[in-house]
Length: 472
Image (tube, rainbow, N blue to C red; front, side, top):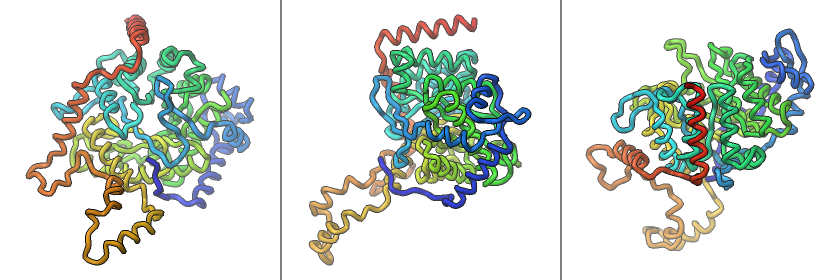
């Protein structure tokens, strides 16, 4: 649903100042870029070496911005377009599946994340209208860590109709997933032309691009898989204790990633990601629910918009370990901020306990909240004002509008909740929690969502057996 309202947390003058601060960090301070092959390509691209750092002159940024795609279309495995990034009036939300723990939707207890839970999250995403992509990373405690990412990706292919966002534990995992994804797509060329997935990768703030991250960027760029590059800059920890400074640092780290991808392959699709948050000095956590975090995420989305890049944001999270008042308040605030921002993709729906666990119930609840906020973000349309005035004049003082054709034709424009109650007489006890669990139970008992033909399923099973043989 297209939105008309946007939140401006940072004006154009501040954006320009942050841009020039970013240029200073890129060209004067520089980054440590590990990996000889990519470092050589950067020097060929126009970057300079200064000691153990790479400097990125303005010309390299301008060159990268001239070749990177401004819009990215993502498809399903059958080649049907589902998402177009870069339009700025559309947002798409996704869950997360790389947590160590899950809040069990049956018992309500926190337990280790299992392989079966990836299947649950895929099935649940399929049922929820406002969840457009499923993250497949793989922290299943019952899968060998060497092949967690690959197994989770195979499961997402089997049980999800939605676009797959994935990352990998190592470079080998990315190589394997590119092989799997290309096979399903019909070849590497077909995968790059109609990607049904996008990759998630991170530098290490401050100003560090480790060899593993660089090699992942290189592999994704070479086959033109859309890639998110997303630093987690915690103010006072991995970023300077300054809102503007943290934003400039985060921006510089992301744009260095952009230049790297374009130096490897001009035209490689790139998605701007940013997590400028706080390091909580009381608890030593990197907060996922601090108001400052989501203020800066909204500001970072404006920076991405300034460069004409799609933005990958974060919302629908809580630092609480439990589904309680804190969790609902934090999830709602973040979603409200995000829906008015310039984010294209929004991940981490349902993440709890500062990214330690995932809650299927919060995912379902957030789906309802997003639906309501989409109605809010439509803003006020005055194109129908003249028609409305005519109806008011026709009804006149003391009348009502229940029997008017205008009401019949337009009442469905109002949002009607599925989970929240507007009953004339509300029940003594809230039914929201039971409705959430009913939706999850339906996902658990529903037939497996199989979108691939039997031949592909057999091949995927065979590939998984080869992965298990590798780690024996």
